[in-house]
Length: 238
Image (cartoon, rainbow, N blue to C red):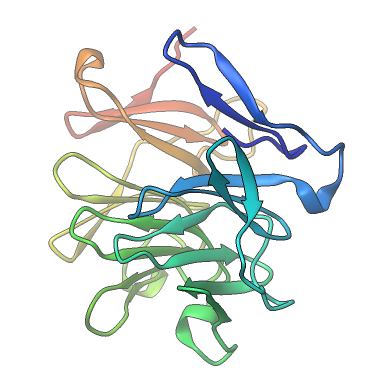
């Protein structure tokens, strides 16, 4: 677990957490933005300025020179091929291949979308959620994209999830969507609650466990919802 003050914690067998990287003080440049394991079993940590690799009992800087415009201040993704992907709505999208880092040029489709959430599905396809152009999928072939013009509820995709059946769920600032077999379904049932701007703004998605009856948890501007058996209902009732 990485914290914003630069500390990294590791869970012990007894359930307690041990601090394995001390915070450097409240320095933005050392804020820990994510921790991931690559295909070789190396633990990588990402700060807003650099990548670190775990060495026995401490982190060491990864010997990679990041371009000044490389996306920072967001979590990153390591795909099954070992490529490191990073997206930032302000700085675009970048990737690291081996020891080489690159940022996609502005004219590239993957750069124009101002991508934030990154996700690799079970079949190895890379999904990128854009804050301005919907959703993009990258596989061995060409890019495939979905936006409001293709039926997505909005062009700002804030959160992504693959369910147990392989369907991709997309939470946008305008509603909830499900993509399966290349078709988009918009999920109705969200509603505003007193004092809330709109429940259509989706912040987070999580798969509900079997002991919870399955389905999805949907965190929105209007509160917490539960999707199950084709229905989306408020999870908390007065």
